[in-house]
Amino acid sequence: MTAPAATMRRMKRILPLLLSLSLVAAHAADAPPPSGTTDLVLDVVKLDPPPGSTLEEGDVIHATIQWRYRRPAGPVRIFAKLDRSPDDVLYEADHLEAHAGGAGRVERFTGLNKPGHVDSVLLVAKDAATSREIYRRVVKADYTFVAAAGQEALRQEGAGSRITSISFDPPSPARLAPGDRVRVRIGYDAQARHGVRPSAEPVTDCPMTFTGVPDGLLGQGVYDQAFTVGVPCIVRQVRVQLLNAGGVAVAEKVVDVDLRYGR
Image (tube, rainbow, N blue to C red):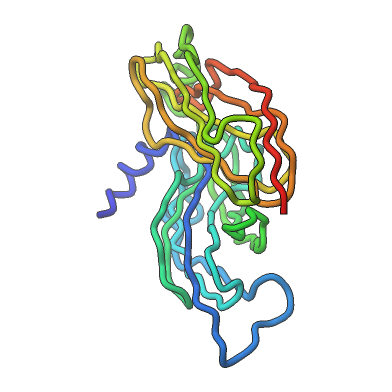
């Protein structure tokens, strides 16, 4: 069930996270696909609120997206996002929802966690097996994000929060196939009224995807995160952070690893 738009906008203020949605498509044997990686097409059916709206920083734009493709004949990941610094952009958290191939609709959100103007929304798709971007489309938009009361206080909270432990599955050193998932178990001590969000991101220029959590975690505990690297690559470091409700890292550790992704 979908929450009302106003409620959803407030819920997503703490979500500068990467989407992981799988869409499963069957290959059409009766007609060969065009040359290139994909014949995927994404169209915006609706933006909510409509273009021309003024939003508060941390609010989000909901996009209803029509998708259709025959090639690749396997999973792809689809996002709506903004062409801004990753630290300034909100977009949707991890989904494992599957759609049997051909065509369909999905709903995604994106927004800004700082004041500014948005004149376009990006529709992006990645091949799920390799994390390579295979599609990008710019859709014109018109949104103004203004300062929100209390947002600066959210950015300031969380001092004293700590990363208490980090472990990897499989443990480093490891030999992996492209697309294999690495789980990162993060121990945390959250000293923030609105909790913290553990994040684990491989430090690499190779195509990759990492996941996030939808809500702030309170107190002490352990949370599993994960990432995938989709091509032959060597990952030497992983950045682990605790992010507060304002999207600011209140604790960080960069861990040396030896993760070798082969063919």
